[in-house]
Structures are given as C-alpha cells and as structure tokens.
Image (cartoon, rainbow, N blue to C red; front, side, top):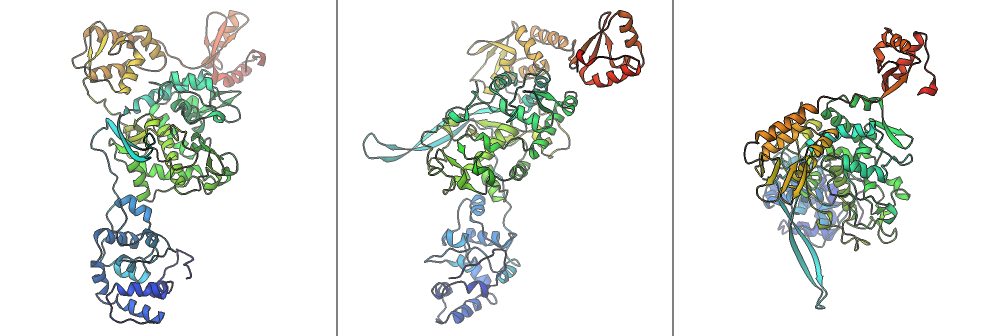
Length: 623
C-alpha cells in the first residue's frame, strides 16, 4: 500500500481513502451497517463517501464517546490537522477507546480492527473536507489546564518494583514508601547570594579553569560556604567525571553561581580567577533584584554551558554526539513559556509540569541524534532505544529548573534525596548500578514566587513576599531559641544556622561572633528579626530586640566601597598638592601625610589627570 509522503498536504475524504486496501475499506463500510456490498475499490469508496452526506456526519459524530469526540476536536482545531497521540494523552490522561493507538496516531499504521473513530481520523488526520464541515458544529476542545497542588506538600509517595529472589519465585513486587520532603524558599536566599557572590569575585575568591571556564574544586568548597544556607544538599562533593559512579550528588548552587556570573557578563576570566567586568562593577551598586533579573535574561541566551553536561552519566556529549545537540536557546524558550503559565504562589508537581508542556506543545529536543549519546556503553547503552529520549529531556528540564531557576530564586523547590526518587530509567541498559540518573532527580515540585513572577514578566514590579507566619519557636531572654513543636523545616534550620550556634537538637543560641560573621558575608539583621517574629510563639523579649538593634546599627557604621590603590608620594607637600588640584583631587583622597588612595576603577582617569597636572605615575608602581 502506498504511504502518504507529506503530512503538510491536505487530503479530501476521497483522496485519503485511496491509500487503503479494499479489505480495509470494506471493514469501514461495515461500520455503517450498509447492506450494499460493492466489490470494486472505486465503488466501495463511493459508497463510503455517500454515508457522510447530509446529516450522516452528525449521526456518525453522535456515535463517538466523549473521549473520542475530544480526539476529533483536538485534531480538527490543531494547526496541522494531525492527531498527536502523545499530546492527547498528556492532556486527557488516556487514549481514546475503540481504536488502536498506532492506527490513529501515525500516518502509516495498519490494523486488523477499526472503530467509528477511524471513520473520522484516517492514518492520523481528518480529511480536509470533513474538517471544514466538522468545525461548523464541533465545539473547540477544552483549554489545557495546569494542575496545581492545594497545599504545600509535606511528603511524597515513592513506588518501585523489586523481585522476590529469596524464594526463587521471582515474583514481581511493588514497594511503596512515604518520603518527607525538603521545602526551600529560595527568593530571599538568592537576593543575598547575588551580593555575596559579586563580593567573592571582587575579592578574587572564585577560581575557574581557563579552558573549560568551570569552577575548580577549591572554589566549589569556598562557594558552598558563601552561599546563604548552603547548597541544596549538605556537604556537596566535587566529582571527577572520569570516575563518576552515579552515587555522588555534588554541588548545585555552588556550581551554578560562577557560570551564571560569566554567562550574565558580570565576570570574566583573568588568569585563573574571575574578575568583575565593567557591568559586574556596576552590578555591585545595583539592587540585588535587578542583578538577578539581568542574570536570568542573559542566561536564557548564554552558550557558556550546556546544562546537559551536568547529567554526568550521559556520555558522548563531547564526541560524535556534540554535532547533533540542538541550540540551547531553543530548549530553554519552551520551558520559560511553560513557567510563565504557572500561577505564582501555587505548587506544581514536576510530573504534571512535564505533562502540561507536552499537552501545550511546549516541546523541545536536546539532540537530533539520540544514537550518538549513551550510558556506560556506546554499543548497548545508546539513548536511541525506545523511551530513552524522554529520560534525556526530562533530566535537562530538571537541571534547568533546579540548578538555574531555583539558584536565581525564581522558584521555591520541594525535593527529596535523588536516590529515593522514582526510577524511570530502569529499563535502560547500563543503569543497574546507578543510585540515581542525575543529581536533580529529587526535585518533586516547585512554585513560582514573587521574584519569579517579576523575572518572568508576570508582574511589572517586584514586591517581596512577606514571610509566612508559622509559630514554631520560643525565643528566650537569654538569647536562646527553643524548638516548640515538631522538627523545623530544613530551610528554617539553615537560616538559624547562619546566625546562631546549635546547642542541642532543639536549642540554638544567638552568638555575637557568628552573627558578625554572617553580617560580613552579606546577611542582615532585618531578615533574622523578621524570621524570629514570624516563627516565635510570643513577642520577642526586649533583651533580644536590643541585642539585634545594637548589631544592626554597628553593621551600618562601615561600608566596603570597592578595591583601591595606595599611592605613596615623595613628601607631604606633593601629596597635598595633588589632593588639592582640581584635576586630580576629585579622583583621590589623602591617607595620612604622604599617601593617596584611588579607587581601582578610577585609576585610568587618575593617570590622565596626573599627566594634565604635570606628574606621572610609573607603571612599575601599579597597573
């Protein structure tokens, strides 16, 4: 039987019936309960077409059930007039009954049995003349809805399959377990991290490889300590790609920040360290929310890192498989569009988000050549085998959401240890020894927060969300903080750990030395005060309020205005003359009797002004 070569071509009912055999046509005719039984192909086609005349089409329509009618409606109102089985299942949860999926969902499938639905959708499409008539009385399909969770999740149910080898029966068993989740509100953390990470670059603390631009091991450890509340998983390890066994989570935020700063144009490599660009120096004086919004926009078009590289178990990315990888911007764009559809403040499970993306045609592909990527073995572990492509795109999505959107504070996250996450990759060759497929497998749900709504263009201005009031602590006059009830959420414990020493499993104490260290790292007292007021079962004691106010006032007595150069003059007269000159005085300040201080970003202008005044600063004295 000939096949239909171009799906873009429109076919009338008569034309598309020509592609069926006489036996197939007779099966269709039997569905009309037609007593006339022609034998010639042309005659069978003519009789079939006649059944659609007049009110025959509406009578036939009434024989479809609701799900079958939905399949027809989705097809006739689609842009190309082609039935998409995957998109339909993603939207409605199941396939229409009464007809084989391969018959409806493809252009070329065949089947021994047919249903009434096959009298509307022929080899994946509705004929153009039937489509025009159906649109006149068939209502448009229902809008695609994104399912949101009614409340903040506290646990997730995880199921996995095992086999009973002990008794020799190898009986298949389905195991289930309820796993408590970690809820992390990222918005405030990211606002603080934007400041501290720019300061870290300014201080020369971020070291990267001059070849790959990736942060080195020492930097990952340093960054993990600078990040507010630490990384998503405690004590992130560094990973050697050549020795990766799939059992180490490794850094997430600590890895993302150096890449975001480079991709956002705020930092560049100088030797083996990052230094601030002109835009980065300007960013140190900008509101953190504007820095985050700029980094997010720049990352969407950045090519400094393919997030796929962070899925360590997938091999072939730098070899033959590199040629088939798609443009990063084309992968990220549909994810961002789907994020824009998420109602701010509402939790969405990752699985429902993926289904929604499919139903809305927010599709993307990571590679045009799945066969060139593999797990463990290029010969046996190729991703070209059925189902592997979906695992690949799912992990890319998880990485983009967890490592970049969450690190920048656009989404709050709900997650579990990755080794406890559902294992959708178990049918893939070479995965038996993996505890998880990627370090992002534990991401279960997320919600777009106020910062995310602003960065995604859902709100015109950023309004910081108030901290949710949830009494769970007793704050005592002696500066001790006692847990009042059940175990605190991990996000709350992380925040307490920034400012207070842990005395026991349920007691913390505000410590001046630790709080000064927190202030030095860019944290602020106002955040701690708001947190304690939102979590305390009573009004804060006066002793604690006075202690916080005193530290807060001291935190504003000094300010870091940037890196400066100290220039020594031969005598105090020269120093006073240069400091008092109208050309040079505006660019420097006296430091003692014989020294001048010039901000590093003003050095070029200061040198020009010196020359105008008749002086010169030799290059041996500084750059």
